[in-house]
Length: 161
Length: 161
DNA sequence: GGATACATACTCGGATAGCTAATGTCCGAGTGTGTCAGG
DNA sequence: CCTGACACACTCGGACATTAGCTATCCGAGTATGTATCC
Image (tube, rainbow over all chains, first blue to last red; front, side, top):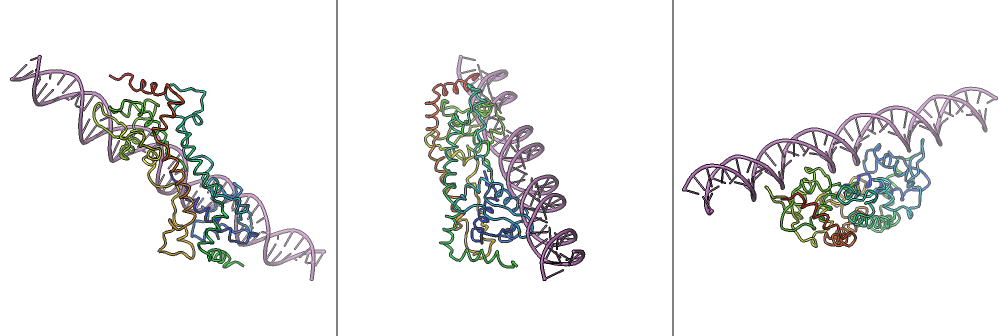
């Protein structure tokens, strides 16, 4: 069980975006250059974030992406779901359906106690991620590294006409 | 992010084992037949459980697997870790190391706040799984389906000489 | 000088290869069982 | 009848194909910008 590397890229990229002037969009190429990432593949992740309503995209020159919502209303869960998809990690294949004494009419994804236990753990995981907003993360980073916002902003604005 | 299907097989199989007479081992073929699973592949999962000390294996005729510990001391986390491996889902690639202002001596897997948030969620997930023992699961199933233990035991003993 | 039409360059967006890891299968090493011969 | 050795069949264990999903890349559609031309 392994989470896509794109999640890490997406979270860090969204976080960096909170330190940029909100009005204008920033291109994939520039976002990718910040960490030396492959631009085309990062673009793929940003597309997913856009489809999820986390980012908004604008085409053409001076185009790119920007946060579509306030950082207060963007959680880590939102980002993870946007990249990884909504399905939970444990996918009940209804093994009980293939065993003896099975009832064809029963949906074992709900009634199976193993499935329930796994879902409970999954929910705990999601609860933690949902409790962590981009704004809170931003605030914590600024507390720990007060110079980070300026560093990020300067790096993005340099060479900009 | 998707958990291996082997986890579902492993949990249900271990659970079934709690309803069998503890003394003797039961072969992979018989365990697989219970749910119509491919025996060789299930064997692979049982090997992993054996390496993790959850099952003990015995070769030769009358051989097979049996629970190596009391169901009270086997948690869902133990089974998941045995199959999926000990690594957490989110693997920090230390993106910050490749950005501006990085300190080559810093281990960002610990200091990066994104990584910390992800780890916190992962720990919540593990906590839930660790709190769920095989014995508790067994008891809940017996409460909901009082005839399940006999059903399982009969199915496994039938055709046995 | 101002407005308009146009060419241009830049951006996202989805369609297309490459690669790692999970899935599924196979055969060999080891071992307890049952049998058969001998005493 | 009892003992011992032996052949056998059954089991785990790891090595070998196959498939699905993540990773990476490329090219086309669309658009705002800047320019040149015309009024």
